[in-house]
Image (tube, rainbow over all chains, first blue to last red; front, side, top):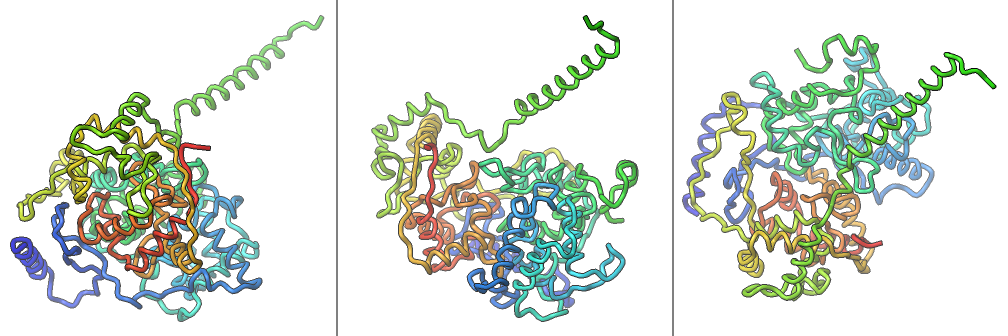
Length: 302
Length: 269
């Protein structure tokens, strides 16, 4: 026991000495012994866990609070489309993913692009479109790139349902404010990402669920994916946000492995993202077949 | 009589060629790409051997059926888990973890250097995770007495057994709260939902994610407690350890009773 605690103490002090004393942006990580009894696992008895204080993130309304009226029906429909896009909006989905594949916990998870943080800030200028886009147009580009499908028109019933669901999720959220947990976690790279390291990390930590070839795993009945594919024809296309190494790394850092977020450091997350990036995925719909073959792949950064 | 023209023969040949190529591609794809979700076979010889151990025990090992039920259905009152229909590799891994000697506390373990830049290939096969331990006064001596062959046999036997859960009546509030955890988790505390790994209805998924539906609530609660106090530490990437650490006592009861309300059957129609 004493040895463990002394080792712990030295590690913590060493970390505190190494880290600069300057006021850095608040790190949501804290190194602490997680368990009452020392563990045998490696890394021995220190594990990095995100410490979430109650009230740190916005809490959207509960599913049971959906009103019992026409609006409520629309919200439920929107939630169904969001959770099971393959069944409720099949004509707009071009690959095997659902909205929840990335927007975890039905669009509620902080740092997994939660809807309650994005709905109140739209319309907003986007670099990708180089103009001010509305929330509907943002959803359209989700379908076009991340779902590798056909964008529903802004007046499509599915679009209405999704917008109603997003609006309901952000009930009580301040309008126009960048809430904590918005988008993805921030990341700071100290070296260029290496897909070789990424392959090793992928095989040891990701392949268990996402498959050795990133093909994901189908449900037992063969319909839809239990664990989404990361590349290949059933994954998002080259125009998607997650095709950018940095964005994918930001997502991975906070959320993967599921439940053990923040166990990869920033560079490891970038390595895995780079390994994902080098694989084949569907073409970018903005450019031609020819340009998709012979122009440099988008998303690699500079 | 119609004379066979060059054009007609060519078209017919081309048509036959196209059809046969399409047929070859389709059939070839179906034969070479066995979907993963279908592969859960048990070895019949091992099942017969495992049955003897499960029902009669070995010398020094009591029969598994004594606690886990005659058909591997578990024990609701005492909280012994059901084993029928679990993935054979999952059962085998648990037995191996039960049998493993926990390392002495205070043993110095040299941390594996993770500077992959220098020798990327060397580290490929190394696992940096816990070998996995489960502390349990009842199961540890039993698992230690089993040989590797016994473990293989027993796990195949239990994997081959049919199982149907008997849904228990649960009050509405508990169900609602359990459902919330199973389907949405606690996103404000960064806790993922249970069903994300344990299958869409908690019926389990693959060799790493055991079923929750059909397990006695008492067993589920005791296991989450063990994750929390460290008596169980054999998951992948600390996923379950981190998740269990975010559960309150109320959460445990709600989610365990929610899953006891689920209907679920394996290996039978």
